[in-house]
Length: 457
Image (cartoon, rainbow, N blue to C red; front, side):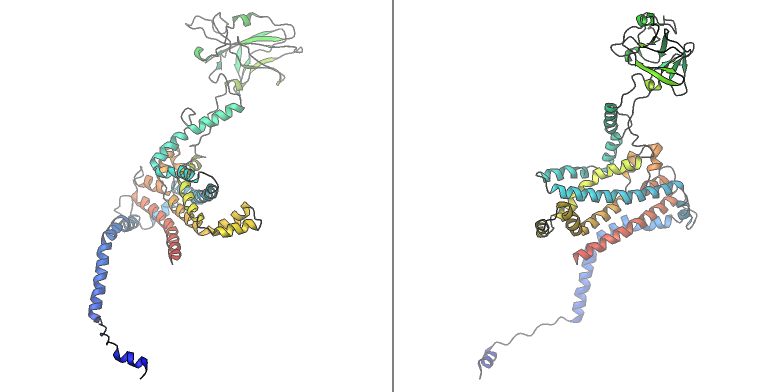
């Protein structure tokens, strides 16, 4: 007898394997399903109450009129694509979807790559991510103030005015106007001119009003002395003065003893429609043109003396309101894109990057040919997520856009609210817009879910 036969003979017999009856197995399976349903039931009820029911109700409500009593079929959908305000909302939504996610993904990619190369990377990421902690309501109020047209309130226009004034001279007397009548005429372009032509040897006084005495420059002197000066045979002299005496005791059109000149006023001598000489008034408002040839001249105060001061850019005007709101959105979400792309960047194989550097590739070639292709899945997820987000944007548009330009900035979410509750009181049309918004969001959501499943598999 062999060793194998002896060991088999002396080994203890194995106990029989118990088999589960089919009925018991089915019972255990049903019990597991019931337990799973019980655990998921609260979430399913919440999902049904907050998602499924509102969607079905909106679809049904979109088939009725504004009162909700008369069935109109697809009339609301037809009206939606014929309403100019809704068409403008669709156009603005398309602008948002095309511009905002692309800019955010690009900025996030660039910042994520650059942050890796700086010393205080964590602090920089924290600084850029902080706006994510600010609600859209608070961010909207912040940017509504930042975009204010008044340079004393809006920080962007304050900076724009400062830069403009640094390179371009501003008018010293934006409120001044000539005392028209005998002696002074107003021209079509806003300039003022003496009502008579003069020749060398003449003196011309130009009276002005509309300037508060308190707004006069500190070096402004009385104009009576300048008005009394006589012009030489080859010059024209005169004075530009504030024709106002405190207390009302002065004589209009005449330089009285207490009336002051307007320093810094530009004066031109015009002959045959061409400016032949230019000068600027002194502290007492006096001016003179010397070495003039014999002939007839018109003394003119050009319109630039009275130009309104530069007020900056109309950020919230009809032309720029949508880009301005997108700028506020970028401020909030750039940190989000940077952090997600940075997380993907940290998983890239460093040996591939180092091998490219050893082969002589520069940083731009590495970025374009290695970093971006390897980050393509992450960039796609970030882009699609931002597309879904911008399709639902409401708070920023509603808060930042002023009332007069609300229609120029409206998107589908705000238009849905305005039509339904913001004065339109047509919940049938508003529900149709909501269904359209749902149909636009669903494909992006499905794409994201499928991509996530593929990555998990």
